[in-house]
Image (cartoon, rainbow, N blue to C red; front, side, top):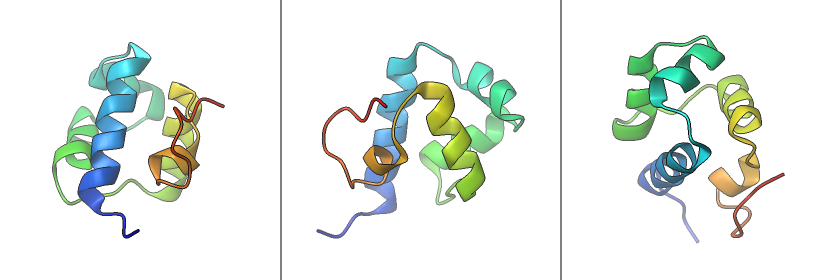
Length: 76
């Protein structure tokens, strides 16, 4: 199965929505701008691998889930 950026963005959107944090709160914890989060979710921009790893740690989800290597929930 080919995974598209749009599918990964949809997983990121769902994960952030379900974590109970706003985009602004998440951006602060990651040390990036709110605009950067918006670009990851709605534009053709993918976070750097260290940012993705930190994001996954903060929202308690496996990077494998975000990247479609796991299908179930992805909680670590």
